[in-house]
Image (cartoon, rainbow, N blue to C red; front, side, top):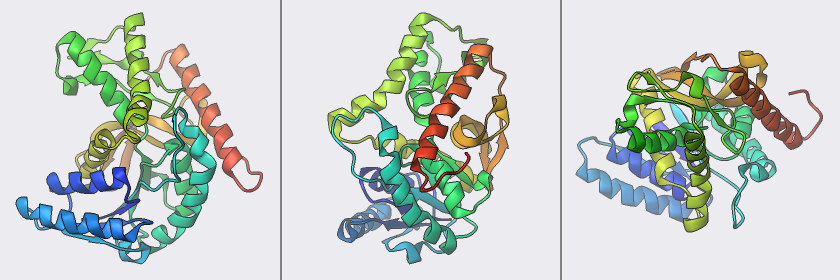
Length: 307
């Protein structure tokens, strides 16, 4: 399995390291604006991989070197400003970046799956589908995967149940309009009650990414682990269910935008879109989230188009 990581900053570098440590793939290509930094990472990781059991080919390269990748992971981003509080503000700059990167990457690896990490992930996942020409089942963003995990961790401490046994999904935008689907949430098989304290807990989970970014200048460990979990599900055809940003086609009256919903991930990419039953408040929140993302997408297009 060949994976190419586009963007050799903190996230891309941490992802490459995590893929090596977990022995997920056979070949990693790192592409970055700073070729020296990408080559340094590749060389360091080539030395590190001597301490794992799997033989892994790790190298830096250009877009041409990504040819034949089975997974293309997009971490590249325009520089973020200080006091980061809104991912959507990067939409225009990062859309231009995707317009530069996605077409040649897709041409070099026409059978690949695209995993979008760059933000705003819902907007950029939509553009990745548009720019690659790939079918929507082969393009996915990490979306609310980390947000959902953060909340599960908080609930785990409260109820004394392992996070893996808590089923709850944050849905919609990876951003301020996301919501928790309490109506289908459970912990150890018991319904997870929608309470004010848990809503406050969820607000802290959503804000945690901004908190980490403003303290250290990036988020890299959690998202790298989440992306590795996703890539491993593709490699092993694991059929795990997870909330990812994918193209919505009619669910809750929404079509034509990318938002996080639970999906089943396997070797071909998204093998099933789940359609959890939401209560009316949650359904309205999903539609409101779609409106937020649709407006931003329209604002990033170079000409008037219906979305």
